[in-house]
Amino acid sequence: EDQVTQSPEALRLQEGESSSLNCSYTVSGLRGLFWYRQDPGKGPEFLFTLYSAGEEKEKERLKATLTKKESFLHITAPKPEDSATYLCAVQATSTGNQFYFGTGTSLTVIP
Amino acid sequence: GAVVSQHPSRVICKSGTSVKIECRSLDFQATTMFWYRQFPKKSLMLMATSNEGSKATYEQGVEKDKFLINHASLTLSTLTVTSAHPEDSSFYICSARVNGPQETQYFGPGTRLLVL
Image 1: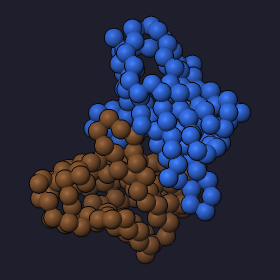
Image 2 (image 1 turned 120 degrees about the horizontal axis):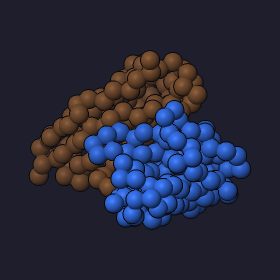
Image 3 (image 1 turned 30 degrees about the vertical axis):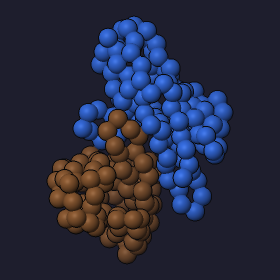
């Protein structure tokens, strides 16, 4: 059964304390893995798309990497404004190219 | 990135009434839009895929007669919650697919529905 799992469920960091969020997936025929940021009461905001193992994307303090089984979202020297829920989604040919979302990681960065 | 709007952002209605939510792609044309529902502290649940000029495709367990979807143009899809009940209260989010070398979905800001 196709599955997208994110960990940890919640993460509290001190400002400047770097860490990583994990998204593991078990699908056949991965077409893309997507990272989104969602603030409370808002729709998800697109961050990155990764298509193949070994690919990396960066945006400000965020860096996303991809292997054949998982993706990491690395946050370097986070700031309080990075606090949000980070969602991972997978699109696969085995699922009719539908997007499957993980349950997200709620990140809190403490000043 | 592409901009998707939703209207209204928040709606309160009485049980038994119908509510229409609009989703618009502002700076691009979207042949495909998606409607999601999100419960507190839960992930996005795909309700249906809306294709311009054709009938929507509903996910298993979603009542198509209750959640009416119309995608009449390349920039507008609507979701109508018919005969709303308190259990329909939720956060509804639409997204629009952007095709090309890097396909992705851009999301609207969401609509908070409260049925009394």
